[in-house]
Length: 89
Image (cartoon, rainbow, N blue to C red; front, side, top):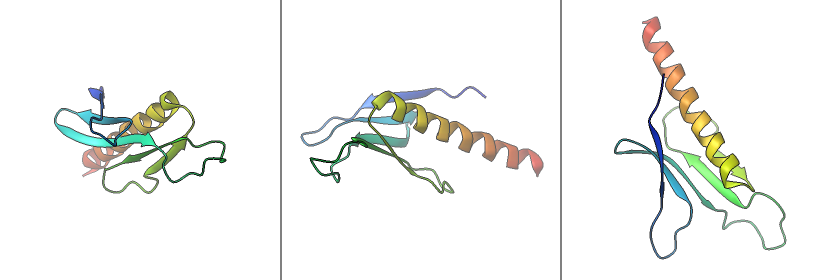
């Protein structure tokens, strides 16, 4: 199934990162990891998924591209499993 996922830059005075949308529904987002210390190397960005039933809903990475790929894959997997359950019924 082809999903029309779209990344939109978050706007606001103290925001960073992007949000993942399908139509008018926000599925997840990522931004700068403010909980890491200055001396901590790695995990500069943190992202999350807002879909029900996802056990691992937080993702960490140093690369925004890698984080976007992880979030997109989690969303696609969620939709694939949801559709598979629906076909079984």
